[in-house]
Image 1 (cartoon, helix red, strand yellow):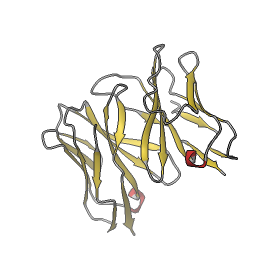
Image 2 (cartoon, helix red, strand yellow):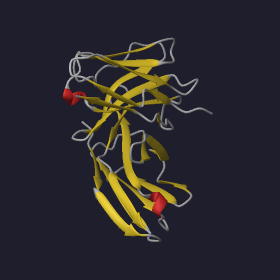
Image 3 (cartoon, helix red, strand yellow):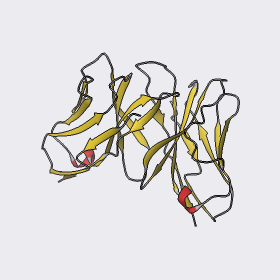
Length: 112
Length: 115
């Protein structure tokens, strides 16, 4: 059974800092890995999807990397802003329905 | 274009009552998922619909939970005889592309509180 772990559970940084969020998964036979953002009381917004054949994806200040062999992904956020404050979740598809298995998330607070 | 929509956004009910939650997927998306997000359990898969195929119900926690998808579009999740442990945010997602590029797009969720 796939298990996804995210470290740290919470992170607080001053505005402008670069930061890294970590995600690990136990079964390396994945199609892709997605990073999501969730604001309080809201649904999930897809940030980046990395296919299993790719090593990284970039969108603006976000860069996600994937190392399938070690079962790890990182989300790098450059020049953090208070508007980046949210919970960040990583997820991998699997199972009979290719349903997503989620990590428990990293709650990020960027202080102005 | 319009994203995934869900209704109601909030629902408060009494223990033992039945509730229906609705999901409108993105037009043209053939795959539809229901997930549940609760404080102690994180995000859990409930049920999956793909086109006209029989749904994958492997994530439903009990027989009080059921779902249907009419005409390959709108889906309704029904919880019968609600219990306090059913309190959670119920999220719906849809997708169109199967394979490594598949991205699931989520709705805003329905927040269910069972008193």
